[in-house]
Every structure is written in C-alpha cells, then in structure tokens.
Amino acid sequence: MFDKNTGLSDKQKNFCLEYLKDFNAKRAAISAGYSARSAKSIANRMLTKDVRIKKYIEEQKIKLEKHKIMDIQEIQERLTAMARGETEEEVVVVENTGDFSSTAKVVQKKVSAKEQVKALELLGKANSMFVEKIDASIKSKNQELLEDYLRGTKDGKFTKS
Image (cartoon, rainbow, N blue to C red; front, top):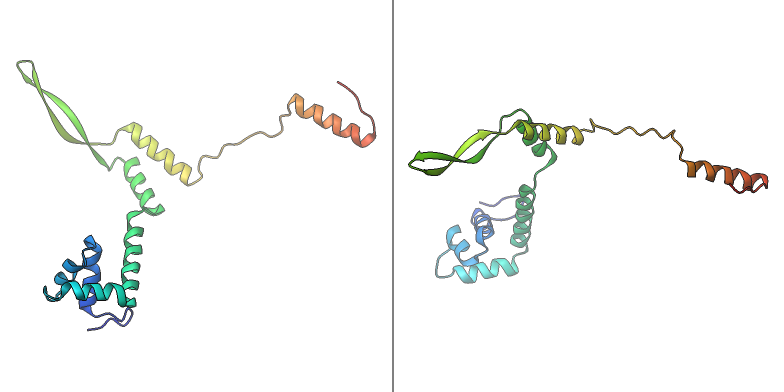
C-alpha cells in the first residue's frame, strides 16, 4: 500500500524509520522485510537513487531533532510543577548501620523550598512579572555640566566651570 503524501510503500517507510535508528542500511532493509540476500544492494539503491526516500528520511530527521528541544510550554509546565512541589528528585542519604559503619542509599524527595522559589522566580521573569523601574529624573553632576555647555554653544556664551 502506498502513502499518498510521500509516494512510498509501507515497506519503504519502514526501511526509512529503521534506518534512522542506527543508520545501518542493510539491517534496516532486513528489518523492513527485504530479503537478507539482497538487502545491501536494495538499501544502497534506495538511499542513493530514490529521491522520495531521501526526502522522507530528511523530514523524519528534522522531526526527531525538534522533539529533542523543549518548547516554551514544556519549560513552563516543568517549572510550574517544581514551584508547586509536585516534582521529586533523587538524593543520596547515608544511613548508620551500627558498629561505626554506614551505607549510602538513594531516596526520592520532593524539591526543596529554595528550588520552588527559584522556579517561581524563573516563571515570573519569563512572564515579565518582575520589571525593574528606574527613576530617570535623577541627574548627575556631569549631565548638568554637559547641558550647561550645550546651552552656552547655542547662545554663543562659553563659560568654564
């Protein structure tokens, strides 16, 4: 059966998807259902001569790469879960076993209050909740001198301070 969008058969699409796992063309051809005897030559022909297969593999690569990168919504969801204390982390705890010996053990614990506050801060910054307000009305001594000088150049009066 052929896919109308790609022009590839199910077997060809399976080859492409198998090929993307480890880029072993012969193994991908065998996994897709081509005979082991001719798998190498079929795979070579598909990868070098069939433009549709090349295009489909490139499209799938792009989709896989996009999937590796978090989008803004996922970042905000994870930060929100941390801020609400819904996230757990692994922590190494040392337990006393007696006779002056101890063992290390990995336990799950909820994120600390400090980490929750940091997540809240990052969410606030991402949503422009914390905007610094700067009072621009304060003038420095140098700014006043510059303004006096500029007024003097307009009037033709130059004064030294």
